Image 1 (cartoon, rainbow, N blue to C red):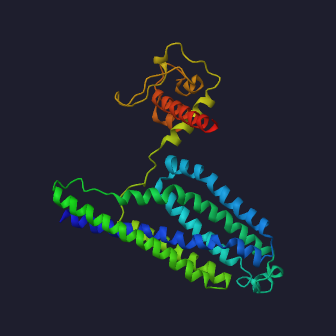
Image 2: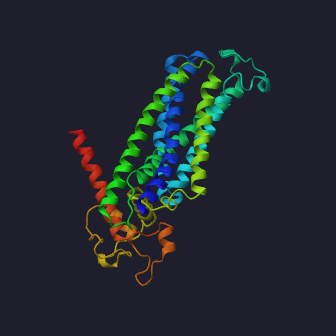
Length: 332
């Protein structure tokens, strides 16, 4: 019974979270036709319109690194996902409002889909929508799939019955098979339905409504307790570790390394997980310098990124060396 209960709860949670994925697929079609909107309504050339959209996607990709760090160090996956989907929905709403008919009476422009009807207010709403959607896309890129993967392979740790566990796994596999079919079906239906809608305001409004609804359902699922505590707190990652080491090493760039490497901050890692100190990439070792050998490093100093452990420094060295080796192989 415990297995059946867990499976039912997981199915509800997975369905609520999957709604964000479905809404994102519907919204992607609206972004796909933005070039046509700019060329047909704004009267821009194809190269100009494509340049705007490519810049939008490029900036969004760069922001993914920043938001991955924010999710790992400060917000956690859940808050990042909730905020990014909300911002993305607002961006879609602004995109709808940028079409000439929506604000024609307020802006004093005509309501036809022509270049002369696109005034400063419509342009302001459009470029604001691109900023918001870019931020939302970057935030969802680093949180949505990670949150979904957590529920794709759940396990009942309290169940010792292998037969029940096997039945549970089969039920979950069946659910995700149906879920994948729904994703494909929604993609096809959205593309066909939106392609047959001519007014641009309605074509943009449907994804906006869909996205707002999915965000509300997702938040309601958390409020009603359907989700676990996964992602509520930042857990840190390799990216966070690398950034902490870089900041701490820069902060102590003027300090001299101790002759004895044992005087470097060892941290509170378990002996089995500690990495031995190496002499390569010595500039990173300054991140582990303790201002005074007799001074005890507290958690507050670690949180301020003033000192890192030897293990964190060695992990950063391995990361940098790995990236360097991959780059070298690609050049060859």
